[in-house]
Amino acid sequence: MTTVTAIDSEFDRAIALAPDGAGGYHGELGSGWQIGGGINGGLLLAVAANALRQALPGHPDPLSISCYYLTTSHPGPLTVRTEIVRRGRSVSTATASLYQEDATGTPVERLRVLASYGELAALGGEVHTLAEPPQLPPVEQCIGTEHAPREFLTEAALLQRFDLRLDPATVGWAVGQPSRTGRIQGWFKLADGREPDPLALLLVADALPPVTFDLGLPGWAPTVELTVHLRAVPAPGWLRVSHATRNLAGGHFEEDCEIWDSAGRLVAQSRQLARAPRAIA
Amino acid sequence: MTTVTAIDSEFDRAIALAPDGAGGYHGELGSGWQIGGGINGGLLLAVAANALRQALPGHPDPLSISCYYLTTSHPGPLTVRTEIVRRGRSVSTATASLYQEDATGTPVERLRVLASYGELAALGGEVHTLAEPPQLPPVEQCIGTEHAPREFLTEAALLQRFDLRLDPATVGWAVGQPSRTGRIQGWFKLADGREPDPLALLLVADALPPVTFDLGLPGWAPTVELTVHLRAVPAPGWLRVSHATRNLAGGHFEEDCEIWDSAGRLVAQSRQLARAPRAIA
Image (tube, rainbow over all chains, first blue to last red; front, side, top):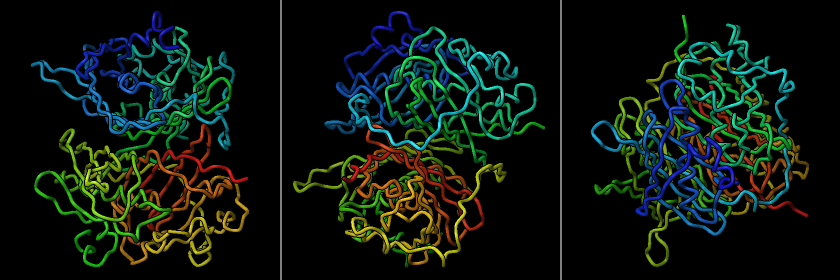
C-alpha cells in the first residue's frame, strides 16, 4: 500500500528515506509538520519506524515501538541510523537514532527508538476485547481544529495535514471551559485522503491536542517517552482517536491514546509521559 | 535508603552489581527469582535499572524505562553494559543491555533497556489526579498466592519473595471461575519487609500473576515489551497493585499496572505487551 500511495501522499513523502548503503537513511523534515516550533513527535517516530522497516526485511510492522525524545527537531535534512538487536523468525528487535546537524555540521541526536517488528497481517485473528470504542457524534457534528486556542494554532502548520473532527463534549477548552475530565477524542483522517496503515498510526498516536488542554493547561507539553503498541492493520476510512490522562504529578502526566478503525477494531494503543505545561494564573 | 537496606534485603542482594571499570557491571541471578522456567522480568528490569543508576550519577531514578525482552534468562552470572545517549541537567537518557553467557561462553543479550533518569524527589509536588486507587478489602481478608493454579505454582520460587494478598473478587481463576473482567489486584510487600523504593517498583510492576488468568487463560504470557513510568517516591508500607487488560488480539494483549503507595499516591504506572497463552480446550 505504501508504494502505491507514496506517489501522491504527503505523509509518504514526509517519511521517505534514501539508504546510503552504509547503514544510514537520509530524509528531510518539512515545515508543514511543525507544531509549536518543533516537528510533531508522531511524524518523527514514523520516520524512524520507516528506517527500521527497511532494515528488517520480512518484518514490516512495529508491534511495539518506544521513542525517547532528546532534542527539538527542525525542518531540514535528517539521518536515521539503525542497529539490529536480535533478528528472530517471527519478531525482530532493533534500535534507531534520528540525527540532524547543528550549525557547525555536528550531528545531534533528536530521538532514540527501541522496537520489536513483525508482520501484523500474519498474527492470529482472534479477538477477545473488553474495550469499548469511544462514543462520538457523527463526523459532521464534530468540530475542526480551527477552533483551538490561539496558543495552539500559532505555528500549527501540522493541523493542515489532518482532517481532525473533535467531539464537542471534549473541546470546552477551546472556549475557556475545559471539562477537566482529562479526555479529548474525535475522528481522524489524513487531509489528502491517504488511508491509514501501521506507520500512519504512529503519527495519529500523537496527532491530537495535548490532553492537558482539557485540564485547563493550554501550554505545550513536551513528550519524554512515547510507546505505541500496534494490534492490527487498520481498515480504510475514518479513525476514532481518544486521548486520556488520569494522573498529573511531579510535573509530568501520562497520555493514553486509543485508535479504533472503521471496522470497529482497536488497532493501536499508546501511552506517553509528557512534561506538564505550567498552570496559568 | 538502598544502602541501608542492602545489608539484609534479598531484593538488594539480587540487583547488586560490581562495576568492572570498563563499562560493565557484573551480577548474579538467583534461582529464588525464577518463575515458569525463567527469571522474573521485573527483577531483570530492576537489575538493568540499577546499572543505569550507577552510570548516571546525580540522576538516581528512572522517570520512564522501557524494556524489550529478547531471550530467556536463567540463574547464574550476568553482565550489564550501558550507553549514555544524552546527559542533561535534570534528565539523562541511556540504554542498558543485560547479557548471560551460553554454554560456549558466548554472551547472549537477554534484554535491551532504554530509559530517562532524573531525581523523583526533586520534581514538583503538585498533584492533579483523576485516578482512583483500586478498592481492596483489608489485607487480612485477601488471599495469598498459595491458592494459585498448579501451572502457576510449579517453579514459582519467585512467590516466596513476595507477601502478595489478592482481592478475592479477582482470584476466581484459582478455582476455575475467572471473572473475565480482565483485572487482578491486591496488596504487595516484599516478604523480608524491605520497604519499596523506585527500583523495587520495577519489580512490583511485573509481580502479579498474568492478568490473562482472569480471562480463563492459565498459561504463560511472555513479555515482549514493558514500560514503567515512575511518578513519585513511594511511602513505606503496603502497596496496592492492579493489573488490567482490555484488548487481547492478534495473539497479544496489553497489561496495564498501577501501583499506589500507603499514602494514597499513584507512584507508578506501567504497560506491557505480552504474547497471549493459548486458549485451553
